[in-house]
Length: 563
Image (tube, rainbow, N blue to C red; front, side):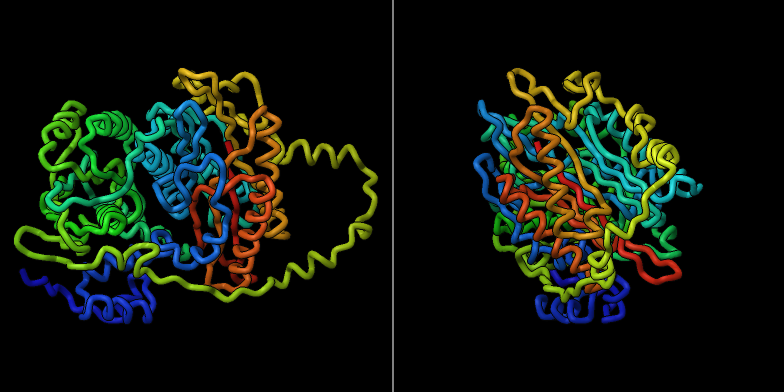
């Protein structure tokens, strides 16, 4: 079947989609021809910073990954996985949803919660706890107050309705976050060792299903949106923000865990960033097989959606499932019981090509491996230089600070500062007792303590970072963040075992910003080696900066989770 030519693409088309001229040239080389618009859109989302980690993977690979409890190393699965004894494992991960939350705080934060929970239960683990870490600008600004209300309500509404307790987190205010807020969500789940499901596809002839919600136009090019700067017209990118449905996700959770027990599942993956194209390419590349996908078979909730819109939509509460041929009925029956879509949209094929169709028309034909991290996706080693402010910081003399005469005024300032004052107004909006597994709700602790049902075990969980420490000295500040997390675990009676991270920085093409990133990685490595807490995975979010009269101001945060 011949390929649809659609609109002819040029380097200008590529630039509009967020690709560099050199990347456009590489795409033509990979395909051996000029890509059509659908194919170029595929590469634009899969080679975006959000999906490819092209500017960070070189340094992420230097993080320590070996540990006595590790069951899945960073990058092997949707989330980190460590053994906790008695044949049980803990799956956990943290991710950012910054740009969507800055544009539409309620849905941006809510879908961040939904997405991270799907990463956990896609592996076969049942989520048992959620945490978050938030960064806002000046709390006296009307915009900051609007963003705070929307984000906190979005997290609370989604988590409460989904039925998983929010057991910990942190909130920090600084003027540097006036434009780019940071919203980082985390989920933790429990699964029996050996009962996890991998995000993989293999076995020619095996059917490919899309399950869960119908597909809409929300979230199209969301990965590209998250891989660029926010600007004055970013509000016009509102369609890049997904819309969540926690009740649908609860149904999807139960149906997903039930089909895993049938033994009919070959592989399964959440349809988060980049939607269908991300799931099909990553699963196919991992299993060294290809897929034929008919986009016109995908259940949609909007009429007349184009093929590339269906392919790139990031509509929430959806999964891609590869089922063993001959066992389709068992899977379909379960999803019918839970009143969810369960539609076969394709099949696994020999080779490693992904072919997408609308009826009899072939829209795209691309190699799966060329789209993914570790395959053909570009990897860059950026130049970095020490920021000028670092020398100024080092030149500071503590003896130059004058003695304070009005100590009562100082104490009053500290006691009323929003970064020190109680955050009760935030956490009381979250349901911390749903499921009645939170052991610390009425007994405050340095880390959340979670009961592992049916055992005498508990998990200690915390998110920690001092953004100003990391800004002042990224390497030392990041090491301090790891140490703080370890102390909070120990002071709560736990033993530090493993780390997941969420790295939020400015533009990676800025050498001074990249220097911050590199030295934060070095600090994390140093501390994790010292505490014997391997990094199981995490998330990198670049382009968190804004512009003011003085020019570009990098804004970043680093988060740690340990249990």
